[in-house]
Image 1 (cartoon, rainbow, N blue to C red):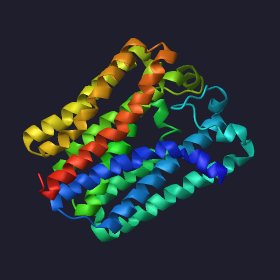
Image 2: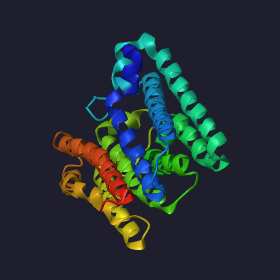
Image 3: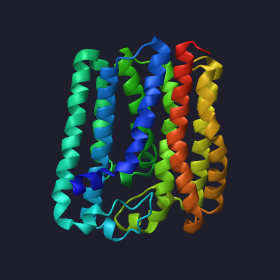
Length: 299
């Protein structure tokens, strides 16, 4: 059990409900009601997908020797579970495949009860989970946007779809904020591992362009994350209450400044990595709260 919990990276799993509740928020604003069974299944499927990508990442990073070359931080370098227990590696692989199978089974259920239009999201999600460590980490552009596709586009649109039975522009626009934020989360977390990642053939933008240039991408994505809901509200796709998510800009501005100023100074960069986590957790939850308030008709 310790191995399963370790490779699942439990503290990291908080990101999943933060993104799924944003899809819940758009669905409630659009329809005024929630099928809580469907929501629970959507959350479970999203959690098992996240656990799967974590476990497979732990397994393949251990097998490649990357774990032995990284200096772990609270935000990067893996959990350390398999280097401490090498004989447990096969369990990590099987756990990753099992949880991916659970996600797939839930997806098949929703295809039956909600329609086959959900299939493209499901197939893309399974592909992202399985291919992330083996192939995606070697393609800079794909490595940059894959996390946001998974946690933003797929989780928000997917949750909204299973709760409403269709695709809606509100969910698409809402998904752009976690799309940019989660891309930024993984991007900044790659900074401490540049040398180790390069040694096993990974190619992300901190490696290809250098940390200072990657920090500029990080800052640009932050701007887009906060600009997206403003544009959506101006165009009428989201209610004004969704702008509650903009409250985290008080964290985002100093975080971007630290990333730009200390891109190559990892000890001074660490506080930015911590703030980055808070931004990713709080922003979609605040947006979801705003959407719920707007849907309730109380304000």
